[in-house]
View 1 (cartoon, helix red, strand yellow):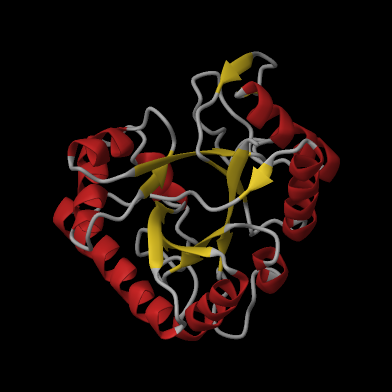
View 2 (cartoon, rainbow, N blue to C red):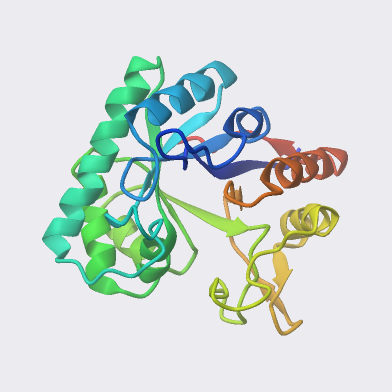
Length: 252
């Protein structure tokens, strides 16, 4: 049976303000990218999220970001590479401690938002992220296929995990359409569910201009910060299961 990992960004509230129904999402997905306090999240949210993930058998990933709480990590920051490496290491270390307290562990690292997009092509920041991850041990690094960060991670001896997005529009070169543009985020539950099945079975997706492009991935992402996140994730899981596609965390 074909199997695939289903991941989502989780724990992106702050203080008394939740982002979404994380507990419901953790009953659907197989890997959780947990915010580490630099774009969202705080120690208590991190602990509660890790507790639920551990009970649910969901793999825990460190969702590391630029230090940008005000911008939710969606603004590019021209940060010194040494500082960026330290920022990444710091966030992983914080989540590692909380995951251990919850009876689990950090299984991988996924950059967030503007940092994720920058290190597709930004060599210096990509190298800094790799250095920050490598300082915490040989943790798998998740990102877009053919990105600078995954190439550098492989050269550094880190395992890599490629992913694609069921609820984001693609440019013809395989990059994600900017969130500043209309149609960048998909909200139609049934459309996204059918798209996910097609992505797994055909290893392709229709770009924003209607052309079909190849995609490579070990994991599919459903964003956790959209109003329909729980409905989309549930519909995607149901559609994959109906197509006899199993769901499980990736393993190394």
